[in-house]
Image 1 (cartoon, rainbow, N blue to C red):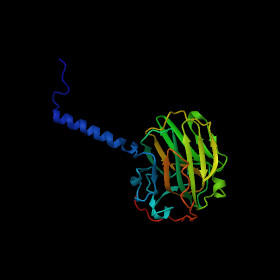
Image 2: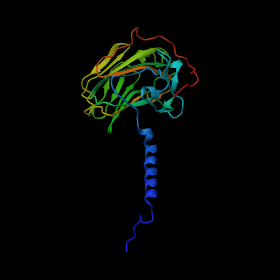
Image 3: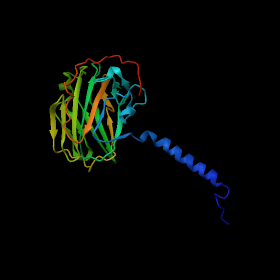
Image 4: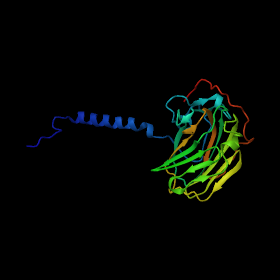
Amino acid sequence: MKKNLFAFVSPDRLFSSLRFAVLLLAVLLLPLVAHAFSLPWTCGFEGGNLGSCNLSSLNGNNTDYTSTAAAHTGNYGYRITDDAGWNVGTGGFYGALDNATSDFYVRWYMRASTSLQMGQYMKLITLFTGGTETIYNITNSSFFLEPGPGGNFNTGSGWDSIMGSANGDGQWHCYELHATVSGTQEWWVDGVSVGSTTGASLGISSWSGSVIEFGTNQDIPAGGTVDWDDIAMATTGPIGPLPGGKTPAVSTETPNAPTLK
């Protein structure tokens, strides 16, 4: 005679076990769930934390934080500490695109400390859509796209031409990317076009629910800090620099004490 395996399990006990399993699964998946935002979207970190911008931290070492020392405008910016080596002490922050789009512009201000030296690359923007990863890097000589099936695109103008050398210049610069899934990719630095192409198709139909990461990792011989502020994303553009252009404020090498994440 077959035994009923649930004969001695009360409904209340079975329900409690199932509820525990659901809660455990939710906890395990929590790091994979990104805050979502709709376009157009702006983030100046003025809430003093990433959550106020619907963003989350990629750094588990508490070396990245909102800080008054990292502000381009207003009271706060976000400081990322990039250590020397390949993917050492990586950080950055991320969110998710709430609405589907096949075309977007993203503009931000970024400042690299003079101690930081460019090596192989630094990731600026990374998008995850299903199984497709699209990476917009900067190298010494170019902005470099890794779109998987669509082929690579180099601008021919990169870190060294912006900074004047392989080291950061401690100055704020305005970066803007125009990204499309169909092939058009454009870059501006401080309001000036530095390269474009119409032939870098990404092999996807749209960014829908895609996770977008900012400043995730690097391969550099000498580390330092990279400050981010005044981010804006839209489906029309270019967005362009803020009125008055960039602020020539020199980066501090010693960061302030961390405030809110």
